[in-house]
Each structure stands twice: as structure tokens, then as C-alpha cells.
Image 1 (tube, rainbow over the protein chains, first blue to last red):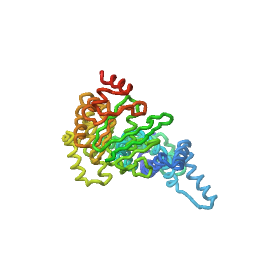
Image 2: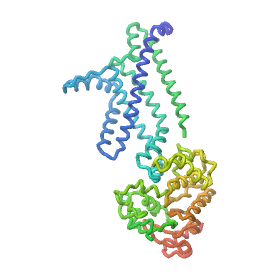
Image 3: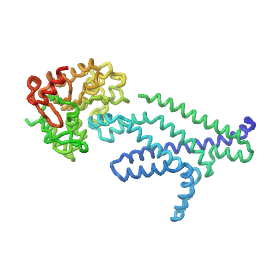
Image 4: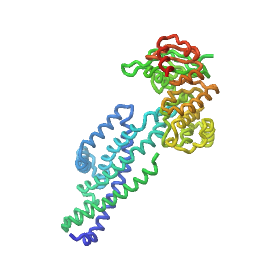
Length: 221
Length: 245
């Protein structure tokens, strides 16, 4: 139960794990942003098949727990592919990255859809009345406003994804939670170790929240 | 000379609701036409069909000899020379006043940045807002916003301007400044279609007043005539209500 002593021992491990947590979260959030935007546009497309794809994907992700998704990507899909004759093996990192991206992408597409719908219809009409095409109006008028609207929810999703990355420890990705579990398994110092893990998450998310506040203030209309 | 805007047997349905029930209308170049009538009479819908913000269900509209109801027509190109001013201004809140005006000509590559900026400043001078070049829309009053919206439409150098109740969302003391800008436009020969409740403006500026009710043009006459002795009983009833206030 010695916080200080445990800290000096576990800290190098946690920092190593924290770095992987940051790496997998940041990468997946960047990819999820693009995926979410595409899914959102698919969902608003005039072509019905694109809308179905978007709906099915979002429904699938929202309807299943993250933990199931992790196992599915890491174990189930490779088995299916092997059965079909492809030898695919994923590292825990890439499986984690894929899962987090798919997961956050679905939620982000809903966030984007909500924000785009929240922009007054008069804005699109005004832009179109000046001769802009749908796409030009989207880019110059709707999206810049939608981005400001969705910032708080987007940051929320960032936070959720960072925390969800701890679930990837179950497939052996050596992120912060994994390192902590290993250390506790060896030393039984669960209180001190998990306290430090919690503090690291708090600091990480605190910094993100602070930066988000700055950005929000900067882009205010 | 043929008319600049020709509306031929225009119908518009919203689901089962028939909002326009066969509108025929011709507007010559340089004419100012005011459309009046009770709310729900279809006057805004008629206006919005002229630049196809609403898709007509049935019928033809020709603007500058282009049949804009033809699905093959490039409506984006046609809209460039049909300016529109909305009741709710619809300025782009994330852009400054100047950027609001410059956006479309730049995005459509009709002007260089310097030309667009020059034009914006010139237009703002014309609507009396030279001091608001770099302001954001939220810093403006309603009347100022509507004048910027007019300048924004003019930046595309349209030869037709559509006004959809441009003063209805304004505080009474700001109506005058917007109408003054519109009057000046009219005097410079702009073709204008104005949906309005401002009977004074219709009287002073319009070449022709159209009274609509229930999706039909009930009466159409020069302002002096329609206000002094309306022929249709519905027109009489409507004018009695709005003019007795």
C-alpha cells in the first residue's frame, strides 16, 4: 500500500503503456474522423445502397459491446478468413486500432449527422441561391458551421475512445491497463497501481479537455 | 420584347396540399412586381420556384429565355444571375461581412480576390455599411444584416432580384433603411419580384401588384389601380384588413 514505492517501480511500465494508449487512441481517432465523415455522407446520399451501408454499419457497432467487437476483430474474423483460405494474423495493436476506429467512426458519423442537420436550412438555401453547387455549399457554408456545433460531442467521443482503449488489454496490447495488470499480478499492489493508472488517465483527459476548450474558444462564431 | 420571366401554368404540391394551382405570369426586364396576399396563399412558394429552390410539380418557368424547369438545365449557372434575399437574412455567421459578400464570386472563380474585395467594399458603400466591412453578422442589427444580404446577392451581378418578405423579420424602425436600398435598386432598372406586406413600398415602387390567395393570382394591376379600386372581392377584403391598421 505504499504509493511512493510502488510508483517508482511501476512508473516506467505505466509510461510505456501510456505511450501505447496514446498512440492507438490518436491514430484511431484520426482514422475514425475520416471514416465517420464518409459514413455520414453515405448516410445522406441520394443513392439508397450507400445509405443502407451507412445504416447497417452504424447499427452493427452501436448494437454490440466494444468487448465483443475486440474479440471479433482479433479472433473471429481471422478465423473466418483462414477458413476461406487467407492466412491473416493481426497483431494486438492492429486489431485494437481497427476496433477502436470502427467503433469511434460509427459514433462520429452520428455526431456529424446531428451537427449538419443542426445548421439552419436557410444557410444551404442562401448558398444555393448564389449559384453554389450542393458540394460547394457543403464545404464553404455548412461544414464550417457544423464543425463548431459538433466540437463538444466530438471531444466527448475522443475521451470515450481513449478510455475504451483500455479494453484492448484483453487481447494483449501492452497499453497502460495491461502493464498495470501484469504488475499487480506479480506484486499484489492493486490499490497503489490502479490509483496511479487512474491518475494518468485523469491527467491525459484533463489535458485533452483543456486543449479542446482553447480550440472551442478560438473557433467561436 | 419578350418577358424576362415567364411563368406558365405553374403548379406546386407539397404532398396532398396544392399550394400553387396554375400560375401564369410575365415580368418584363426592369419591372418591379410586388406580390401581396394572406399568409399561406403561396406567394413565397411562387418566388422560390423562380430560382428552383422549390421544384415545380408541373408547369414551365422561363428566365432570360432559358427554360429553368427543364431538368437538363444547369440550375447552378442560372441561379448566378437571380439574386435572392430571404426573410431571415441567412447571412453566413462564420464569415465576416466582407467574406459573406466575397464568398460566392470567389468560390465560383468569377473574380480574383482583389476584384471581389473591391466589389464588396463598393457594395457595402452602396448599402451604407462601409464601416462594417470586417464585422461579424452577429454584431449587426437586423436592418444592417438585411442590407448585407442584399449586397451579397448583388455581388453576383444578377439581373433579377427576388425578395422573400425582406422586412418581415425587422424591428419597425429598421424597415425604412432596407426599403430605401430596394428603392434605389428599382430606380437603377433591376428586375425585381418582391413578396411583401409593405403596402407603402408596393404603392410607391411597384410597376405592378399581384394579389394571390389560395394558390391563384386573384388580381393583377398597377398599384394605383389595385389600391384605389380593387375589383376582386377577395382583394378588397384583404386590402381593407391590411390598410385599416
